[in-house]
Image 1 (tube, rainbow, N blue to C red):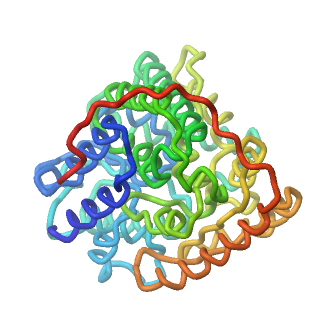
Image 2: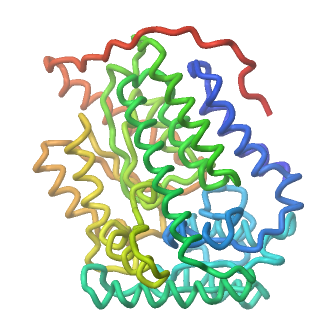
Length: 426
């Protein structure tokens, strides 16, 4: 347990660094430190646990506002699952397994674990959890996303799982509750968009790793309204500050795409920063959940879920689909909106489905005349130096390509002093 806390603390301290000038940022780090603390993990007994990012969050929150989301991400929980899963299982699945099956804490003791069967690894996890006595509600993903039949099949699966959640929690899913959860997610999405825009306008204000950790903390906070309030205050502080002439404002802008980067495994974002690259944005299955929207216009639960399917599935990144354009659309969207200089395509070992998408993304990058580099890694640290060498070479190539181009003009933002506050310590 001590190693897990050390893993969390180390990442938070590295992300905060010495250059963040905004006291409000520390609130998010304290939230994460508490959520993953030994005291919290050993006493928590959630009723509902959502494993993975691809189950509609608004539906889970409509049933249980304090439900838990387990995404993976931890090197330590990956070690805890070593004897339970084959060695070729991808790190995200192994970490998620370790969160639920370990000798340190027992999150699933009273919980129903909800998951989408979007890959063979997910199916193996569902079977393993059931054999270990964990209650599981698993939904199949349709073989395609673009047809009306697929959207109907997805809707039926989600409603079936909703019935199991209702039986377990004793909470009836009403139109009013689901509409409220959909609107809450829309508020979160608006606050996230405003925050990211403020950081793009002032890229020297904080490290991209810290920016993305702040955003990912929404999965782990129990009070989403407070989270939005603090994010808006942080956005205000950023917009009220002056833009400092730091290196991040001049270095190449990178889009990180492919396998999801999941807290606390921030190896690649931190390596990008150390290599003199500015991580402008991420296009992965976790970050894209901020952009998948539901609809609160219908008057029946069934119609609300059906409308959510129509909006959500085209943007979903699922290993269950052979024709998967969600990731491609997300990357193209960012290439249109941001001054991206290069793409780092991230593939976690065991997530071969992301290599199936690579040829389409390479063709897209070629159309935009943007260099792309593919990096394969896992949650261990043995390959850090090899990755650093490759990223530094990529950075140097991009810098040479930028020589002679017009430098990016920073916006004029009136400076406003920020009161001092003790930096994050845990």
